[in-house]
Amino acid sequence: MEEIAAAAGTSKSVFYRYFGDKAGLQAAMGEVVLAQMQDRIADAARAAQTPHEGLRAMVSAYLGMAASSPNVYEFVTRVPSGGPADAEAGAALGNFFDAVGGMIELPMQRLLAPGRHATIAFWPAAAIGLVRAAGERWLETPESTHKPSLESMAAMIADWLFAGISAEADPIPTKEQP
Image 1 (cartoon, rainbow, N blue to C red):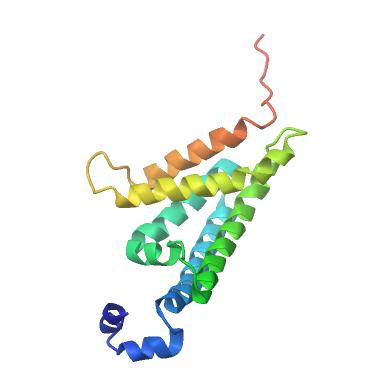
Image 2: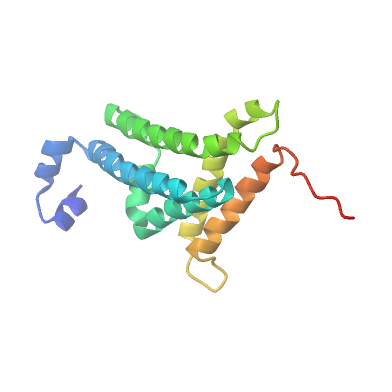
């Protein structure tokens, strides 16, 4: 809290008065940052023409926000440890992932073969886990010629996700050759 107060040019007592403790600050910041991320992801989804394009745009928005401020991202997505303010931070994070899961579920339902719609109940959680784990590994990877760019990483993750759910899709009819 002392470092945060110093960076903000104020005393730690100001932060304690408004937020109670570090967990309270984390919960408040998490609410704001996660709402911004959710808005950007929703905007990306709305602009997409296809489900695959939507996945790619949403993953790119998520990674872009995380990469723009990795320390803030780590602070607001850290799994809380226990107290009441920690529960608030955890709830905000859970609500964020639930909302994102809903955003990715709907377009994918249209792809699923009849009788496979129960599958979609599991896919959003798996997709979010993959994006989060791969994205955090990507953020931690030092810059090098082997590290994918943000757009390349987003494209790879979207391809992995789409390939997984498309295995449950209706087969695409093909034209017969004369």
